[in-house]
Image (cartoon, rainbow, N blue to C red; front, side, top):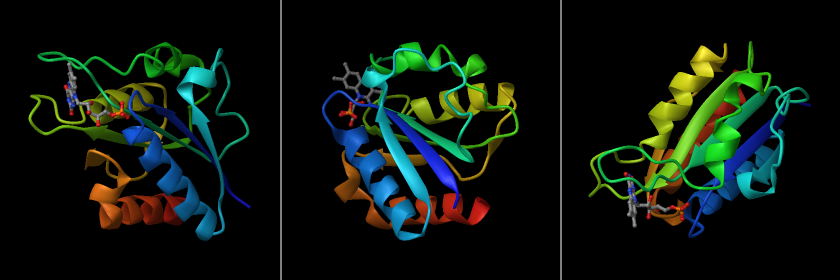
Length: 149
Ligand SMILES: Cc1cc2nc3c(=O)[nH]c(=O)nc-3n(C[C@H](O)[C@H](O)[C@H](O)COP(=O)(O)O)c2cc1C
């Protein structure tokens, strides 16, 4: 059975709700999904090793610049040593479209994952607020990930 790791960074719980929803949709599609809060990851070295795909999501908190969520930033800083080369990756985020870089974490994660040798297997998922705002987009994202495995 395919195994997917879902890492999220979330301050008020919005990105966490999206991560949980993706996890349960993947489980429903027969995929083993492990959801990890970035706040609980002290060292991300080789974290991708036992997984077929890694999904990463975070909110961001800058005004003019993309500032990744506080717990996610130190994990993201290790993206080059996660063992992503040849792995399937997709990014998601919660945000607020009144900001200049709506869900800016998505592009930042995708670019860095590509640089680390990963293949992006689903279009970045951007959600306004929590998971309840975009059930069909979240389902499409989870389906694209499951199909890629
Ligand atoms: C000071 C500040 C800066 C923010 N910057 C952005 C931003 O650049 N882009 C964005 O989409 N949302 C931005 N937001 C909104 C949060 O990212 C949004 O509320 C998000 O849903 C929080 O998700 P979380 O609960 O998973 O942390 C900002 C919010 C604040 C208060």
